[in-house]
Image (cartoon, rainbow, N blue to C red; front, side, top):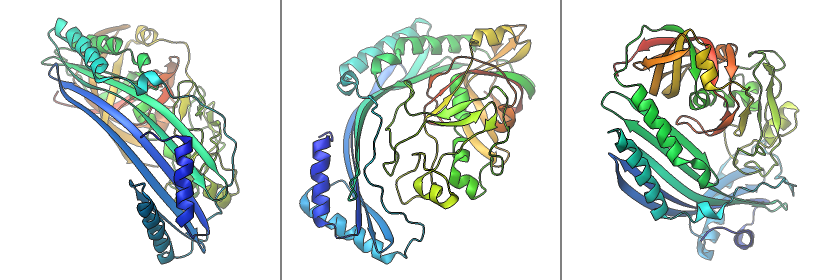
Length: 445
């Protein structure tokens, strides 16, 4: 049964009935998720799952603990409260622990669509059949997944906080393969009709066909055009560096650089949960309202984000970016919106004398956290550009590149768009053209 405001209040009252702690916080969540997966041009999996969770955080004499369950009967809730209190009493007092926040005011967001919540297996199967048919037109093999679902979340505490958020989400991803190449496309959206699966399939097919019989090129420094998914998965490795706690503990690549121009003049991005292409709740893991925070302006690291505890520690104001307590991460911006420009990917290609077009990256790992050097490989459509035209596919390459340096070498950008990748969460980012991107070695495929 999907969580409602009324049911959340009823569960909370049961918890308060059995909690004897000084302060009580309750997180309640429910989700319904369905997935149709296909490979070798055939649906091979169709599953659906519903889940509920109740998590109680208790504070007693300056000691805090959390316990969770998926049982909502009176006996289980009573046992949950007793377990959480027993755990709290075993812990030492936390000198940094703040009182739970009281009632808050939130800006409304509407991210729930009945059409997504009620999407049927038949509709998903019919859509997959159309995608497979498109691949078969060119004697290609398609694989991927089409998922949809809804979730609801409530956070309440004994100081009067009451929050509730519900949303839907759909996702379609497709990889199309020939004997020597592959193409890929993916999209997510709260409203499933925005996925445009057939357009995604067409994009993946074009990439698979254009990259057949890839050539091997010499590794080196190249001008590179990164499609939005490639940009997203790199930028995801930087978000934790804008945490106030990470900077305070000197584990961020921006430690000591707040207020300095670190990136290129044309780089601007913010955390903005209210952007129409974003998703998520308008409050953080403690129920604090999320603020729109300009993080980088004209290359300058303008602001960090703060959870309540971090803000209190460093003398800042909380921005609504904390995670549920207890946690060691502090906070992070998770609704990134990066400004772009008016160029198209075609414009970027046309103005490139020699370079590479990258669809996406995978298996990205951090090499140097302070210089933000990353390594990883291209995948599912890497192309050689010469004299303003895409000439042929190339064998995939491994890169070894400082993300900070890269964001100082961006020459062109497209308008930003909601983007999904494989290594990071969704963001609103542009495609970019970057000079002197370092490809360290070639792969065998």
